[in-house]
Image (tube, rainbow over all chains, first blue to last red; front, side, top):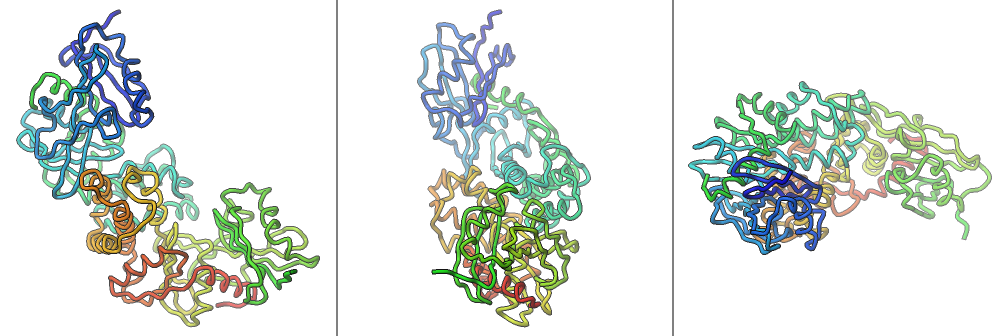
Length: 299
Length: 299
């Protein structure tokens, strides 16, 4: 069966390449590979893309819109950051990139912030545009949990400010590579331990660094269960993040862009603080954002 | 030249093995290798030790006193933790270990704590005994900076309580393996950036997790110097530790057992809080502690 899309959507991050054959906002076919930006050298970029999308190409130039690290300085071509406040995706700001004549390739630029603190995002702006496409006139906070969790304040169709936390990466390093790896399970969960740790970290962020080694000591002295240690480590780190991000979520409408189980952990932690967050699926937000960019509309 | 010691001192950690030929408290000769516990399998323990000390052995059983991870559950033989409050090293509690007939091998047990929080140490108890041997009647706080920094409260010759922080390991993971590795220099320093970050983290520990990604963003947007990023990361993490360890150092006499440059960073951070810590050299404290154990004395 031949798939003939109007255009092709591309989400190209550090570790993964995902593509969709699109008809307007409808998905005709999807494909993915492990050819993330972090695993390719520059001469490998175009071949990695063509390996996935060649079956969908014709002679004419096919519109291809890509978001993510593909537009970073170390990516295929740098799409300079757009400073906030601004709409998360501005179709006029898509950056054309020279490529195979069968492609009309454009990259979505990331966003940057100087004040109140330096910050950058690349990829999440597209999901935020998807949130605005899904919830028109949304005013409030978008939380995008991940390796580098982002909190963004949206108002009147613009990203007003945002802040990034290393929580996900720190969890992976502590659980997988520090001395805690002997005590923290690779899977499993304990809701009560998570909730207690979040509450403790929010109330007293200073205690977080004091409690981390305790996971190891309790495993040695009191047979702390690996799944309890895992949930407690996650709770301490997410609690510390929530304490720091309080100005973002306190008394606000919050949408979580959910990629996996960790989104539910954030939702539970916020619920304990009295914030009932809405969850929207991550892949769908990426596609909605790319569709908006392709259609030439502002969210 | 033949060296004929009375006894042999051994400090055997995860990554290094260090030995000293001793006459009472005097060092006749020293040797070391990279044969840490973490790099050996059980059948390799005795050969690794003999490679360094064989030239010092005679027929009779030579007293050999070892501290560190050699006595851990995953070490040569487990020397069970002694619960605090207790003297840091009790000669009667040294654990004899079967070995080559030319050796009378004994391990120094580590210390454990159940309340107020589970904690363990193994190796540092020997340095703390060395502090007591060096400063008789010392009452106060011993800070032992390292991969896992320890704070111990000493009173009347006993360790009353202690607390471990992952600060050193977290710095190594964030600076070397997280996204911050692109922005944090492998060397270099900036005193002012360190002091500012310590002050900020002590005042507002919640801000630490918010400021970490900022090191990356400032490098991308404002060319933050790698040595400034390095000092700021160190300051944020040490500041968070000092905020959590405040009950230990506030208004106390503090001794820092100094192994390397990081001890001076701790001293500077404490000085900014009005605490003039004394510095004692780490290797000398280890030897003083092992000497005390060998002599059969309580500090």
